[in-house]
View 1 (cartoon, helix red, strand yellow):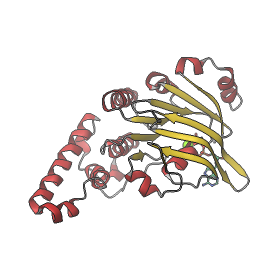
View 2 (cartoon, rainbow, N blue to C red; view 1 turned 60 degrees about the vertical axis):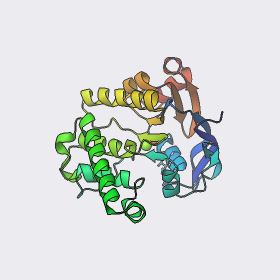
View 3 (tube, rainbow, N blue to C red; view 1 turned 120 degrees about the vertical axis):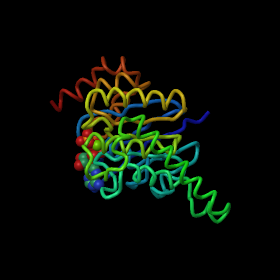
View 4 (cartoon, protein in one colour; view 1 turned 180 degrees about the vertical axis):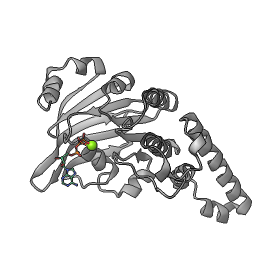
Length: 254
Ligand SMILES: Nc1ncnc2c1ncn2[C@@H]1O[C@H](COP(=O)(O)OP(=O)(O)OP(=O)(O)O)[C@@H](O)[C@H]1O
Ligand SMILES: [Mg+2]
């Protein structure tokens, strides 16, 4: 069976800089694949290539067997590839709850539903979405700030809202760019548990960029290591931990 996500020989160039250099990787349904490497290694650029936020110079990205590397970010998201951004992407004036609902509305278009099934059905769909969003915020221990504007939340709380928004639609593939930044240790542990559960119980494929190495080692089935845009390792966590290429990639930048 084809992998959920297949990145095949993908290269991304910015002028003379090759940020991603002929990288191939696969993520299966229910699999957690970590993407690690030093600063500037090309991790976020590879995410951007998958989500349609940068142009792929060369190579192919397929999702469920279908080429997606020429589609727009919106088209790719609509197919079920959801992501979070390294530097956040919340609407500051909207509350935490409203930010999550924005994510859900791309799936449940209540206006369309209203036309098709009448206003009552639309209102019920809205109420169900709100209930679901509140439950998710509760699970991530941020239910008490559901009605607070995103701009007034702590960095860690904003991170969690962004993650909740991305996963609220239960996308088949979730891309998380450094989700643990700014999270207190107990929230990191919580995040790790949620990532494992999403993969194991819901079959969601997860590609995770993360510098918090203990989180990477505890949640990943496989770890892909980038260095100067090139893939230098792709193996289970315990193998990668002992890999000479990986140690050199990190020590070279220490
Ligand atoms: N839009 C862009 N235009 C030009 N250069 C870019 C662009 N985006 C990224 N780069 C460059 O591409 C290289 C890879 O950057 P990228 O953000 O992918 O690294 P990263 O592995 O995510 O690093 P970090 O761990 O610091 O987030 C860097 O040299 C960066 O400056
Ligand atoms: Mg990055």
